[in-house]
Length: 213
Image (cartoon, rainbow, N blue to C red):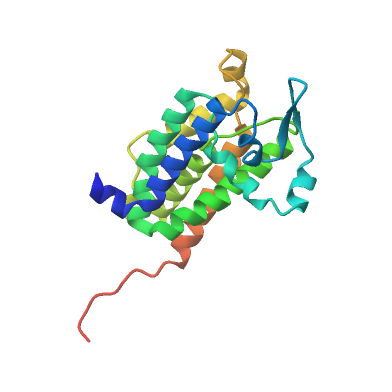
């Protein structure tokens, strides 16, 4: 475990922040801390949650809001599920491509997915690491296919399962069955960002050469 933490520091910090963010969601009923972490400012006024203006939040320089929603989970099962996938896929990416690559993916897939989700569902409070997980999935698949790197190969059937789940969620079936709202836009954009980053990195990659000089 210690060796895994040393080799995958960004994965470990991401898991820790996801856990802390979920604890904030469940414990901060007054929104005194939570309102700083949502995509746009939220406050509780006369017992009602009021969502502020996004442009006003970013005009004040609160750019961290682009990413911090990925660490907020509004259900314990959602948090556990996402932490397991982050651990499984994040370690693969860090081992093969390094911590900087994972951090870049986290910022771009997380931020891009959050922007897309806000535009798709204005006024809603959303969160979760799922968009980043789909970004990890897309990156690992693209990199593995284009470079043949065995360290990033995905378990058989995983890609099909995840894509099938994405389509089921986008169909509205999951929400219709009463399992809550799904951030479909964040998932889809996260996947596209991951595919683009993985393919771009693979095309720019020059494998090390061996031989005598």
